[in-house]
Length: 143
Image (cartoon, rainbow, N blue to C red; front, side, top):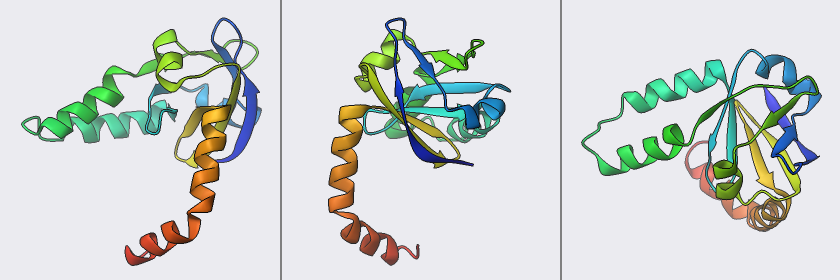
């Protein structure tokens, strides 16, 4: 399970250290892709295969299914770790998510999210400000 919030630095070559506590499970295979809210999603290879299978099962006749599948699948890339526990994020993913120097990695149960620090602070501030309304809405869904 991935949980927590971690501050890291992206170097000039696009290399990013992954929190040490997550490296062992991710070294078995990991995939990074375009996420939502302008962040990146990082999955274990096992979890990614489950997600990709679900997208393969979507009806290709529906434009929104095709569009979202393209967003996640076409933007995906297998990752390799160097000896220092770093991954290299390609330019197209850094550009998509607006990653600069300071990066936040957040754990969200079955995946990690990679955020530009400024974007994360803005998102987190807005979400925290609206947390009561969000909780109310989720309560209506039985959560």
